[in-house]
Structures are given as C-alpha cells and as structure tokens.
Length: 128
Image (cartoon, rainbow, N blue to C red; front, side, top):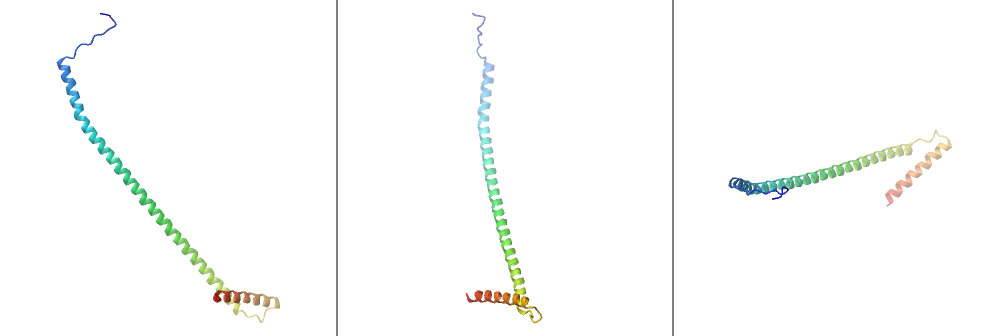
C-alpha cells in the first residue's frame, strides 16, 4: 500500500441509516419548498398585477385632473374674453354717446372716425 493513497472505509449500518434518513427528510422538504416557492411566485405575480392596476388608476386620475384643469383654463379664458368684450362694448357705447359740441375739430374728427369703425364692424358682424 502506498502512503499517498487513502482507503475509504465502507459505510457502516448506522451511517447508512443516517444517510437514508437525511435523504428522506430532503425528499419531504422538496415538495414543501416547491409549494412555498409557488406561493411566493403567485404572491409576487398578484402584487405586480395590483401595482399595475394602481398605476393605471393613478394615470387615469391624472389624465382626468389634467382634463378638468384644461377645461377650467378654457372657461377662465372664455370669461376673460367675455369680460374684455363687455368692457370694449361699454367703451364703444360711451364713445358713441359722447357729446362733441365742446370739442375742437381734431377731437371731433377722432370721435367721428372711431364711430365709423365701430359702425362698420357692427355692420359686417350682423351682415354675415
């Protein structure tokens, strides 16, 4: 026998039983671990689906909020335009009713020209 070679001793009965017992425990654990792994995968999938749904809802709510904000801006612009139109109409009405008897010729001409512009615009507006 060489001193570099080591001989393995055959497994004894006690060691053989221990080995079989460990293998049996492993065989019992594998289905349990597999079942737990499946549960973990299912939970992960469910959480992913919930996250996707949550993100979809958040995106939908954001779009709705942006749509409402856009409508509110349009309404605000419409109100401002209407207010400007009322102010303009008020100024035009004042100009049309202005007494020019005490004005100098240039002022009278200015008022007369603006009155003509107002009248032309109103005629073209209601003629169409």
